[in-house]
Amino acid sequence: MTLTHEWRDTTRIPKGMSDFKRWYQGTKGIADVDGIVHNKANDNIVMLEFKPQASRLTVGQEITLTAFSKKEGCAGIAVFDPMWNDTSREDYEDDMLLKVIIFIDGKQVKQYMTVPRLNTMIDGLLGIMGM
Image 1 (cartoon, rainbow, N blue to C red):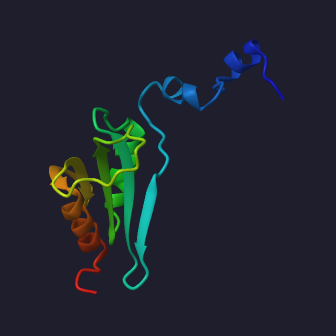
Image 2: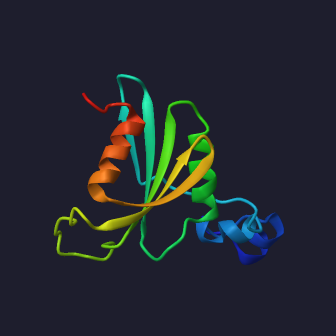
């Protein structure tokens, strides 16, 4: 069913998710989840968001990651990937620095770290170090 322009305007129903920000006048946001890593042994969960290096988190992504990280055993990580558009499928160099925002206890910590350090940090957040 296609809504007419007049009916949509009078009921304030957006044309699609592309209108979400305008519909809520920028006070709320929407986000998807790029990845979830779960440790069944202790029920810890890390939510992952991947972005191109030069981009920023949307309002919805910040709201989602911040709220999620307030829950016990939950954390969020946004990784800004310098190889976002690389189609070669080459491995990341071990010393390549990634911009990372870590969400823990509803707070944000911005860091730069290598891929091995990022993997170690995710393991630590999941509580599986030494296993």
